[in-house]
Image (cartoon, rainbow, N blue to C red):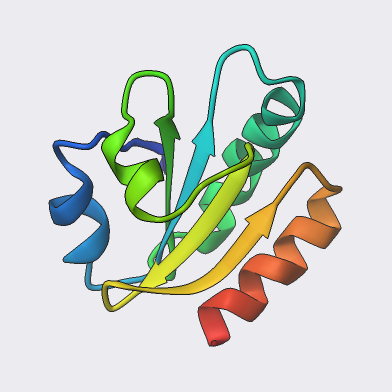
Length: 110
């Protein structure tokens, strides 16, 4: 089974994130952001290991400005984990795959 990373937009945010029956990690990023280009491939790598436990989505902050503003995203990359429609974890900045996985696991459990 191929697990792909979702494209999250202001338009599908409520349906794909807030109303999701499993936790969702949203990566707020931009094309021009160097650290974002480090995090992106790591999330692509991690996505299959979270199949059925966590959805991973990416939101381009240049194309979608309502949701980042609503959730107070000031720096990118910022990854927010939503569980039952509520924020349960926030990860800011680039880091190693192992570090990121540990933080994601903590946010899912939270």
